[in-house]
Image (cartoon, rainbow, N blue to C red; front, top):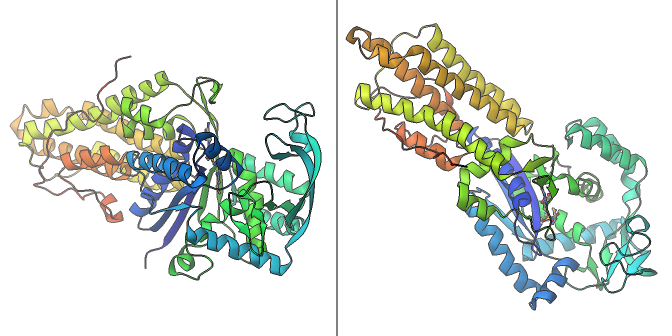
Length: 506
Ligand code: MSP
């Protein structure tokens, strides 16, 4: 039986259309999913949409639609974008689906029965026009942070989750699982937050109706985060002990943005503890993108629309840029010139040129029929070793979610390939028939190194790697064995590739 790997993205709110921030997490998750499949794992890759709550209800009212009509419309935009970006998720959960609602009611009821959810009173600052409760610290100059109008102290009946009860247990878990919260700096922030003391959490609302009713008291709607987080288990079939649930829970990694870490590293694990369920192995919070130095926002009209980027630069260039430009876990800045620079230098020059030069030579010197290599000399062995070492480095980088570092390791092999051509000078070897055997070895090593590079690249640049592998006479290897040196067989038909990435003139 294959080992399993379960990974998730956040489920995206349908009151907003997809932007580069959403695409970022989803592409990162996709690369990891594809890599793990390549490494022989049975992967469950979940994404989806968060469709309940006041924000969606309001957006629908503004748009003159019912919340479900709005959700049905916007969810299609997310799904269409994922398809264009080549996202290989094998499930898509919508919180309005029956399977999800059933699971949320179940866990809520379970915690009520256990006494970990109780009915109490919630007192906070209420903005009547916005129908929103704010805590003292959220207020700006004592006014509503959204509309700047005065707020009043109000009491609302609410169900509470006994989060305080799990404070020590959570700290102990974080302590004994050093990799649970990543990156490290974020882990420390969470530890300090928990140590300051966990308060019980209000987990129901009575100020709107668009959501899952509290079992047995439908005046109350389940708090949107309690509802949303549960998607990670309802997608697998919880509360049923389905095969998927048994095989894939606990999750290997939740990929999220840093703004929603507290929900995933504090709320979610304590809900699971209360329900007696195992905790996630890892929660990884990535950084945020600014746009040419500024925060991305509708009011600044600088929201970067992924479809526009794909139209302009192509899918794989966008996937590459997102993961190469900024170390995963840090904040980064998006700009068109930076993207063009990456395309021209890394993709067109290094990656694309190497393949077109090598395949063109194979066609020119051997009519496109791959010759068998002779004995490898020191420089051939060095290229072979570099290629093999890259696979090992890759494993560490991918397990650390260090996508940028992983790409750097691949690009070192590409540079080594470019240097190898210059040093071996096949054009000189080709002039002397007595050196035909040496020329054959050089061509073999050159193409074999790239075959392995492009198999790894199927995780990052699926469409490009597929093209490259086709020109190397290979299908898309799905098996780990494809990464072993020597896979390219004598007699394979090599065809010259068109440029994988045309240069973009600035
Ligand atoms: N619905 C919740 C998540 C529930 S998960 C159980 C939500 N949705 S969201 O659509 O608002 O945001 C989803 C993700 O987009 C978050 O991980 C957030 O970090 C990410 N991003 C939003 N803007 C971003 C950037 N500017 N840069 C990078 N990621 C950003 O939160």
